[in-house]
Image 1 (cartoon, rainbow, N blue to C red):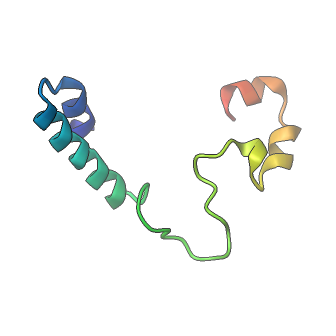
Image 2: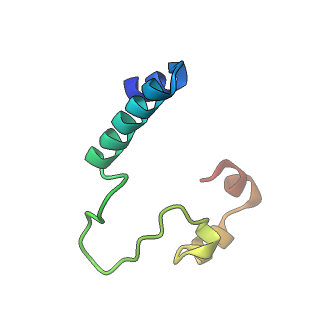
Length: 71
């Protein structure tokens, strides 16, 4: 979170680049970026809307209120 705050508070391009590099490093340590870390044959469907993934049937079964909330 400190790195994200640093991006927000950066005043110069060099500060922004340094802060974004720290955000990227943190996300890689958390497994949010970089190579796939899980085992199995499941496809990487990150960044896709649920209706465009293997979870489409689950998404369609949700009531509109739950879909609006993203639940």
